[in-house]
Image 1 (spheres, one colour):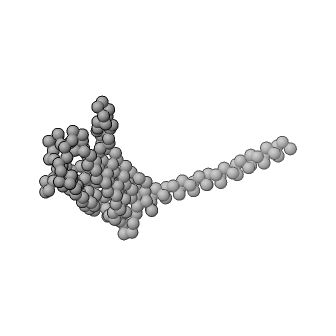
Image 2 (cartoon, rainbow, N blue to C red):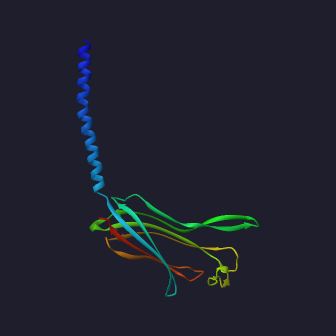
Image 3 (cartoon, helix red, strand yellow):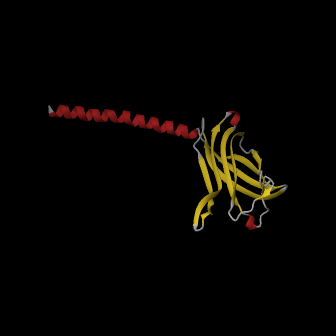
Length: 189
């Protein structure tokens, strides 16, 4: 009786292993098919600042994103510093200034990609640093504390491999400086 019970158990284990292996193989094949559906992209974002026709700065950033259907996972860059701002005689509060980029890509028809991009840039302005005085409502900003300039844009762009687009142009109402955001997408091979 023991031998029959033992034989049935061994047979059950042996018979169940091939089906488990087949299920694991099927899951592995599904995962590899999903990976084949991804298209890795290099997204270059250039944030340029102009004072009239004179370019003051050109800051390039590169994000690597995977375009998938309907959309890939988000990629992000955080680049900046913390600026101390006096809140009272001997107390300071630190403010983040710099650039934040968030992006993801999806596949569209005809080999194009839908690129979602969030751009946030802030910088500190101080009248004591020798910069041109800023005007607010016709009045000059006079302060020993830094003034924080902020730019934010969120957009969806339909773009092809190798294409470069100037996506956003904005003028700061205080300083009159123009910020331009350019985007280039390339498929990684």
